[in-house]
Length: 124
Image (cartoon, helix red, strand yellow):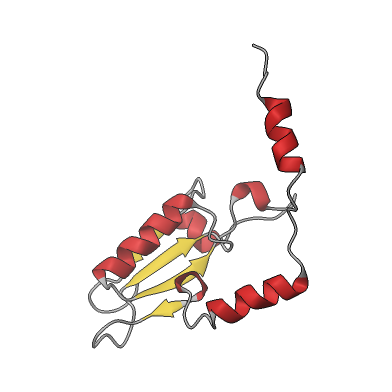
């Protein structure tokens, strides 16, 4: 199939400036203001009267995994206190790297996300 539209689109794209100057970025940062809170950067979240998290969420360090993001949103929406432990995605591990043995004992194939729930009497 011939892509007759591509040269026309490329011409339109090529005629535009796609990079912003540092003064333009400074203006954007100024208008945006400071970011006070980023959920994906938190390593522990306590809600209401909780003194200790009841859930451990194992997720990827870069917050790229959509399943980890959905699980995180669910915990936030339900206001369940949680701790985050990071486990690398298989595709981003260096040769010879291994996932945390604690995680592999729980999830032998190492797929994220993983959830652990506290049991009565302490521990997970």
